[in-house]
Amino acid sequence: MQIRYTNDEFIPLVAARRIKNGDIIFCGTGPPLLAAIVAKKITAPKAIIFFETGAIDPSLSEIPLAASDPRTVQGACTIETLVGSLSMLQNKKWGAKITAIIGGAQIDPWGNINSTCIGNYHSPKVRLTGSGGAGDAGALVGRLMIIMRLKKGRFVKMLDYITTPGWLGSGRKRGREGLRPGGIDIVITNKCTMKFHPRTRRIYINTIYPGVRIEEIKENIEFNIDFKFAKMEKEPSQIELNTLRKGIDSQKLALF
Amino acid sequence: MVEKKIMSLKEAVKKFVFDGAHICLGGCSTNRNPMAVAYEIIRQKKRNLYLYMHTAGIAIDILIGAGCIRGFEQAYTGMGRFAPIGIRFRKAIEGGAILYEDYTNYQMGLRFLAGAMGVPFLPTLSGLGTDILKKWGIPSIVRRKDPKIANRKLIVMGNPFSNRKKPENLVLVPAINPDLAIIHAHQVDTEGTIRIKSLTFTDVEMAKSAKHLLVTCEEIVNPDYLRKSPEQNQIPFFITDAIVKVPYGAHPTACFGCYDYDTNFLKIYHKAALIDSTFKDFLEEYVFLESHNAYLRKIDYKKFKKS
Image (cartoon, rainbow over all chains, first blue to last red; front, side):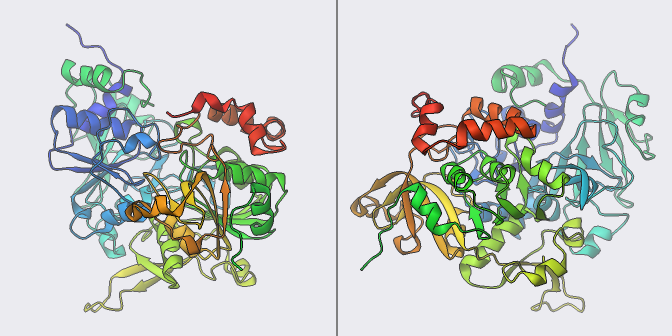
């Protein structure tokens, strides 16, 4: 029987597949949080979720709609101040073990992300929220995952503003700048995933979702991107979909 | 004689919020914003305020919209699902109406901590390689003219303890010592000791960094009561300058254990804030009332009791 799903539902499931037991997940709300909760319910029950607003390893029986939501606190082992929880990212032992999952408005071929402004910083066409904890995550944690819809104007040759550091540029640029080794690992969109070449650090297509044509991806990316390593992303299982639909977000509150 | 700290909202804002003051407001996004104070600041037509915040929400968005703000140093302004980007914040910046500067959340948190610690800066790795370092919203020339604004946005320096030939880079972020910190708490005793329940965000560091502290609270209690469990209290009484009892003082943001964020009201704000004329109407309807009690009657506060 054909499994029916939307690509918006698929996004948190694709991300959840990349989360393992032992991962410590730093995330905001929305699709990143859904990914973490799905992972905990299916393959990574021992994954630990914590928020920059302070709650560590909460039960998340009710889906928080913002990182500042009181629902982030229920069942937590401890709560931190903002400085306390963000210090965890910079902590020499724990920072390296953290996977941060964030969103963003624009991304470039090196995985650098813009969430500050579209247009000139001093007279922007569109002012966005600003870094929040994303800039901290990009600088400090062991692994960065980003969730972004594939849309024109988002995958650009050059960012209007670098808010969150990915690989910064080609080769060893990130290391030379003095950032922690971590770096951006994967970009999860509604049509495909992308990863970064281990030496050049340039983005390439990693997996393509079932039913998606190459043109659909290409037409939304402003720069050249390599498809030669692309594999098919396995379609979602009924278990994965049920976990999301019934077990977690029955009101579809946290999807895009 | 010990000065009386307990006063009305009107008196507290009149006494401690002056035109041009450098201020920080506690809470975070849709959580525990000092809304009653923000409304009173607007009613008293305070001008040219300079704000510092990590994750700003509706309190700051509405102050910007009401024209009270001259400058704003922050890391993030948004109300989650209700208004992903602060609406009046966005308009003000796109329209060139305010001075602004961008940091990360951690950098802003460290700046308040440095202020509380009495040191001129704290170091971090956050910001290296990004435009947070390279692009300054507030240029040196403006910074030098105003002694209250840090003369540099930040400084990159090599680790002075390093053994390496080329020491690792650190980003030094300047301390914040505002004229006034404003927070909304659950309980304050008659001497001024403050108990915040659940998430404190950066409220404690803010309180200690500022020259004065104004706290609004759900209830005022006896010192004996708070002192039975000192581990649950965060701010000692002598730091507090003004205590104002304002139940629902954080509405429409959440106050843990007392009331949730008001989804309906946040939607009303979102819609009204999009256009200048409807925003003005919103201020007329909800802010320019004779008291916070008038506001509570208007929003039918009894619906929110104990979530």
